[in-house]
Image (cartoon, rainbow, N blue to C red; front, side, top):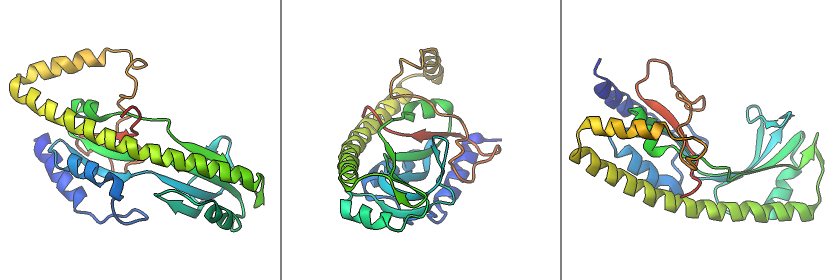
Length: 234
């Protein structure tokens, strides 16, 4: 089987599908990154989110917030307003959680060394319980404090998106020059040396698990490698 041809066919098939996200389109702040990746023959995106502040009403299982079967009381990809959170909390019947989630990209890569170019992750997030069984557990003053923190993270997230785009663009240009200037064996040898590095020291650059569970429509027959990107140091 010609894996390159199969990857190209699968890429065209996936990119032609309708956007099934809640919004139904790519977020404006991450559009340039998505277009840049999809313009490369070795990558394509399967889903993305530029970052968001959300208020969920559901339940907590231990320390894990369950998104499935939760009611989305509030979601915004921009700065949040305290009064909007207060109004949304009045609709909560379970355990309401205020969350900030940074940029996330799910990217399918043709080969493992292509994934090595991309994979980074971050802890730039926020997750705080506000109510239990419909009863508000914090003060309005504390909610105001949390909203300010979430908005600060959203602003920082936008800066990181811009830095990540610039660094990704530079990395892809450098990779193109390297590929055309050196034999394929040297590229593989370079990757082997990188692979031996201590993963704890490779801060901000880490290959995630293959076949990421969050990537929809991914099975064992699909070509390529899946990575999830959470920009941190860019």
